[in-house]
Length: 285
Ligand SMILES: *[C@@H]1O[C@H](CO)[C@@H](O)[C@H](O)[C@H]1NC(C)=O
Image (cartoon, protein in one colour):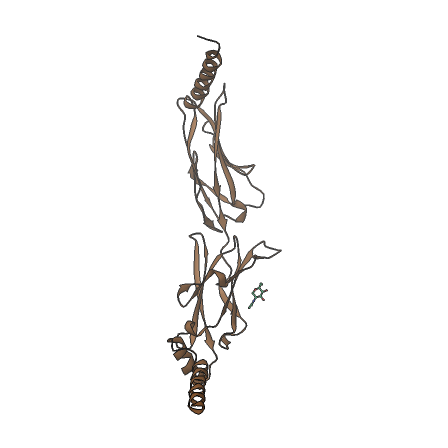
């Protein structure tokens, strides 16, 4: 072999050695957490492993840096739990075993990285760990609502409305519908969520601004809907109508304008102009 091959062979042996370490002995096959959860809910944390003949010394669950659960098969009782600052979750000790842990009453503090760590007995104390992320949602404290500067407007005036979904974490995603259709994106005004300084909960606000065109009117009004959602955990909607303030004769014009006959004011002007020209022609001949 030439000189170039020597580093290559060394690299190959090294890779083989690393691979051996991973395949032989203890390794984690699955780490799963229930996500997303609403505040107060619970579920199962799952950490599965194969020991490949190694004896397990301990399996530990951490939330961030804090260990809250330990299973040590050689000890009695095998399951222990540890308090975590702020009580982000409660472990059901009786229901939990090995890597499978039943939790309930989660708070926002339980959002974060959960780590399962499995270690083997002496002499090598081989340790493996893997993580999964959990999101805890504080559902909005109130249903979404639509507010505006009054719900009756003059034709061609701008309609300005806000939809808000009060105090949740994360803030709700808001969507506006106008006459059952998704609102034109150019009509939307996005505002940063308002944060409650005490609780950290956020109020989502979305603005809608559009000119009140006759073609939008359905029997004199426009229906507006706003939906608020958070992941697959929350979905609520609310509706309002905007009315056009049109006097009776004007509303007939509006209906004509809406059906494509043009604005009567302009039509009569053109008519007047044509009659004037005809008269002028007759007089000059
Ligand atoms: C909509 O909300 C924004 C942000 O809070 C506020 O500045 C604006 O005045 C509101 N508009 C209406 C029509 O309520």
